[in-house]
Length: 120
Image (cartoon, rainbow, N blue to C red; front, top):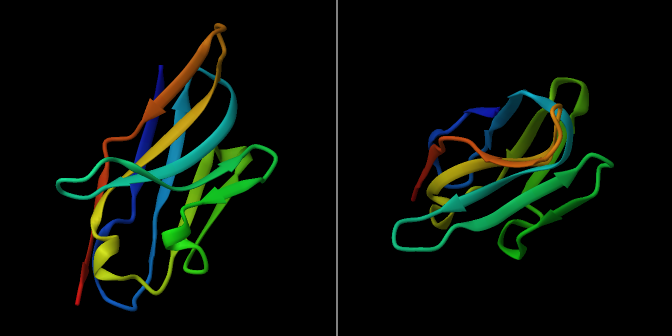
């Protein structure tokens, strides 16, 4: 009922930048929060950064000072800007959105994931 379409992943050299985007669509009454998580091979999925409808953000200690996240509420889109990338940032990045459906009830939806690879 809620679909997330991600874009912007790819291969970049260490020290470079990437800007991801995620657009939510479907039976959305409201989006309480949108964010990005990542999962490296052999590791658990972890939070990268998250932003609420009010603009409050939270990010992992490992990306503070390097990654920022912004949101276009009118377009239901979230944009993480990733700077000073390191090889340890290599992972599949997943978009997440949580909120209320137009028909009532809650949703907690995930995108299909986009690969980010940082070469040393």
